[in-house]
Length: 489
Image (cartoon, rainbow, N blue to C red; front, side, top):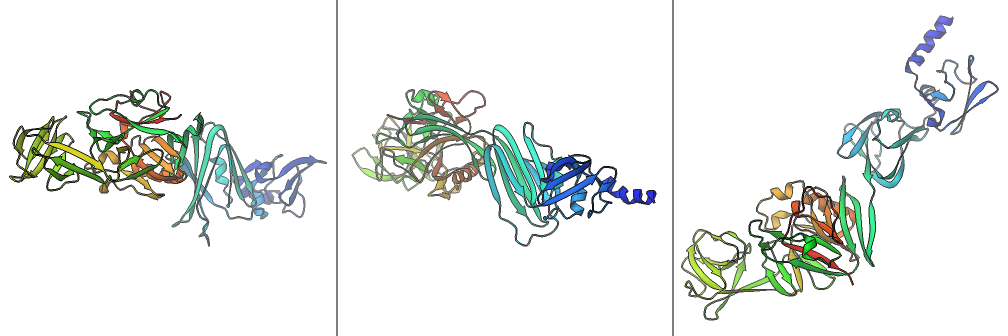
């Protein structure tokens, strides 16, 4: 008989999973030589050397003091939720836990997410004993409880931001839990209505943003065509300085519209620009009228750079004109030569292209020729960037609509600089950790941006606050041609 009893108990012994009673939401105490486990509406008693006290099946696997076998509770019907298998691994920054569900859910729950500084708790609606075997990230304190209503997971890491994302998958049915241990967010007041922030935006993966948020102030484009300097040196008295628009790396010629105190410093290049007067901003393709004045005062409207027309003015160094056109090279408001297109436009010059043999008016080398332009409507300040990221609360990243001939820089993982604002009018000057502009657009939407425009990125992306570079930077910061400087009273 003893051998039969041992054989009956052997499967339980082989499968026994002893865990502290608290793991199951039960308390433990010794009383009159018995071990008593209570909680969650149950009371279980075991007498060492005798077995479980009736009405429990005496063949149930025995406990070991404060530790109680999971199999015994399962056999008693303690758990009201189905059991799920557990797999785990890493997915980017996340620790990913996958619950393999026992069958299709009649109505899968929608995705959920949450975050908290230092501590995080959530309840998974399945019995998932495998979570007790998950290797948690270094420094994370984890507590797993297998309760009648599901698996409770509590994490702690003082000084860190803890975040989770829970979402279902079909075919086969799975529940995916992504857990993130992130650096804490930062907030520092800089001046009344202005603060520096380091925040996480999620799209859905976490993206670190370094930004200055301003409710008021004066934003000014600074710099000088042909001259490179660090953003902080372009506006030494500014509270914050963000790198500006694009420029030709060989000649430091600005690429795109630049209006300073109502004066056009650089002409449009076919991309979206930031335009403003005081602290009211808008973004869009500039409505720009360009006019060329000839030797005898004749005037003709012309296209400008990427906005080609029968007569087109070019201000950006590089090849200009097409086969079948001629090029009038202009330096110091004098025609230097009239040549067949295409021609290489040098720095410091501009060119007028027109159909071969058909200039807008008689032209000879040495003739005066002037280029004028104005915005309609005029604004005090403008600086071209691009691509557009967010427009009126909607994802708007579409570089094919702007003059980006080589898409590769916009596909590379690199720091991104941007100007954005919320619907309430709070201005953001920001730089992201390495990402792509499309991901940045989704992250800014998730953070509450109403409009957002990318400025020059990659090695040029820099945010300086009170003379200090705040975004991480590999190597030495790159000198730039233009920047956006924020001043406060």
